[in-house]
Amino acid sequence: MERTLLIIKPDAVAGRHIGDILKMVVDAGFNIKALRMTRLTRDQAARFYAVHEGKPFYEPLQDYMTSGKIVPVALERENAVAKLREVLGATDPAKAAPGTIRALYGSSIERNAAHGSDSVENGLQETAFFFGESEF
Image 1 (tube, rainbow, N blue to C red):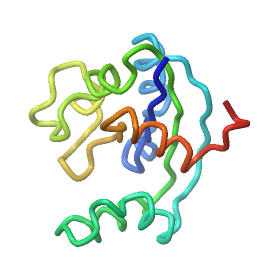
Image 2: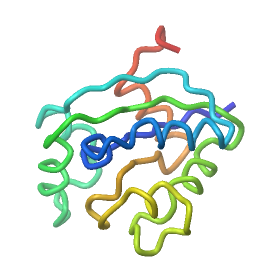
Image 3: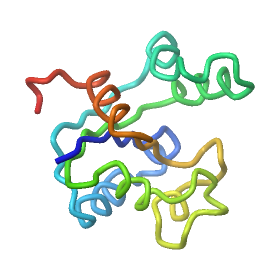
Image 4: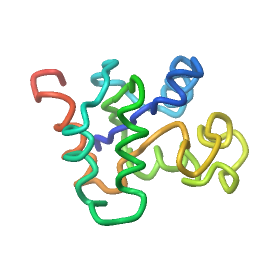
C-alpha cells in the first residue's frame, strides 16, 4: 500500500466541495487514513512549499494557501500517488480531463481545487507534515 496526501484547497473548501471531492477519492478505491480541517499559518505554508522558494509563484502560493481553511487528507491504496494524480487531473483545470477533480472544481492553474503528492517519497513526507504516525 502506498500513502499519498490530498489537500482540498481554500477555493474548494469555500465552494463547499469537500464532500464531493472525498466521494470521488473513496469511489476511486482510496482508504482515508486521516483528515482534518485547518488553516495554514504563513510559516507552515513556507515550510510545506519550500521546494518552490525563489520561483515566481512562491509568494502568491503562500498567500493563497493561507487565505482560508484547507482539508489535508492522508490516503492509502495500491499505486496511490499515480492514481490520485489521475483522479485530480492536470494542474491546469482547462487541460484536465473531464470528470476529474480539477476539471470539475478548479477555476485556474493557481486555484485548482486540490493538491496531490507527486512521488511516493513526497507522499510520505507530506502526510507526516500534517499527521503524526499514531493517527494512521
